Length: 53
Image 1 (cartoon, helix red, strand yellow):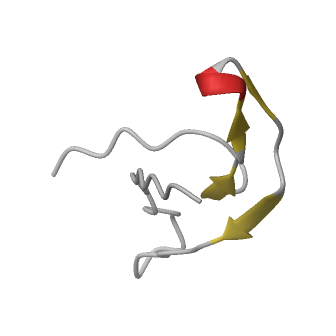
Image 2 (cartoon, rainbow, N blue to C red):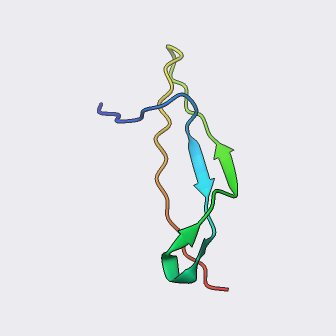
């Protein structure tokens, strides 16, 4: 099994993007977890969603 997760606190960040993609700021971080039987963190989230207002 290959797992390329890195870091201490896996999660997903929410970044509202403005000015036609030229600006943005971190609005929130949602932590996730996926511990295996040995206590090793295996969470490796990926995601992208674009919503036009």
